[in-house]
Image (cartoon, rainbow, N blue to C red; front, side):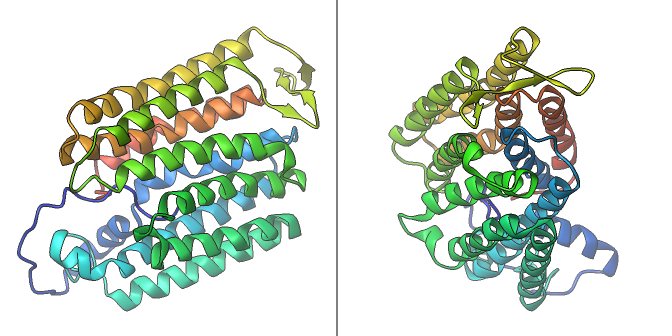
Length: 330
């Protein structure tokens, strides 16, 4: 979470001399720096964590979502600040090397957003802050140190898992019941991030093949079983707002449909990258993995018995795709 796994193609171009762009383009430059369309992959973390506790999402959940959004965007700004020399060589169109955003401004934004994220978590309660603090630490450690080390994918996976636990801590005051969902989301993130480490060079087909296998296992887990809360089967949310323990039928159908949507989003690009691990196909595999985060979050919410929340999270996918066409995230 909070640092890009969708780097550009790696095609080299001569870096232009940095020059300020006209002021009307500055909002767009910041939108590119912060990769605003990617924000639609964030609220589902906290929502999936919240419903895993068996408690209906409320105001504290909204604070957790706000904290997640701030920490995610802090990671985006910090990522480009840390990579500004590399981007000047390989991605001169990015806001920092092109001169549309100053490096000092990007670093200041990362600091301010981190502070805002921690403040919102504190408003949600001590349990939420206890999760947000290590989450922020993980984001900064990944961007500044870990992403170029073998620990990089694990750090990114930990960040996503902690983000889900943030929603659980803010809503229900604890994280134990949300640990299985956090583990599933973290495993998906680990697979995507591992693939992304080779997206500018291509390489062995084993990595995307392993990611494809991981996604198949995750699909099986989220469609064949339900999350438990305090050792009891989760309840399904009924139209009147009550929960009916052990309910099947519509809940099971929704869980299966969302699991299938997750699998369909990742299967083809992973398979293509495994058959031909070239940079373009590897990049498409990474993009598919990132897009699959939303149906996975929705499936996790459905697995916890929260059908309304699951549908709300799933609805973020087409909105994110719409805005991704308008603002570059590479």
